[in-house]
Length: 241
Image (cartoon, rainbow, N blue to C red; front, top):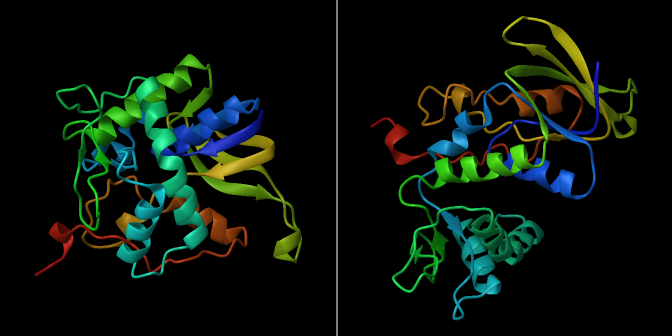
């Protein structure tokens, strides 16, 4: 049995950032991942990160563009939080060593992307996701965060209550891909699921073979309701014609 305060399942961009934040809050945090972190699918992201950095831009305009781009179906409070926090997160990444592309005056380059009323997409050449993974993984290593690499999480360890609202999650059950050994991981302060998307359920996908929706399935089996399952983004190159 492995015991920590907080467990993060998955080690892509979301998982790495969550682990860093939990560590900053003083938790004994560990990551459980079926891949080495820098092999996560975040590495395939090429576009960039939107943030209102320019003096003529604003988080309100960023939020408006995001809501409009979603045909006003996005969760407004989540969009507001994202738009407000994005500039500080980009600056934090820069301080951690993220090699953003630059203008001649040394400022972070921002380019126009679809749906934007102002150029606000920061990027690192054509390998933004690759550099993002390496930048944050370096911070995980620097902080001494435990990473259980190539452990495949099978299920959440939840209390056995008939009423889903009364259930509590206290860890996960996982197996070591190399040895086949099954072990429990206890985390009484929380389990964060950051396992990526379910692209492999479709015949055509640009997602990596590891994107099998493990987190969705574990949460569903534990009684957690899944929201907005119809909103899966497809790159046009995967649409049969």
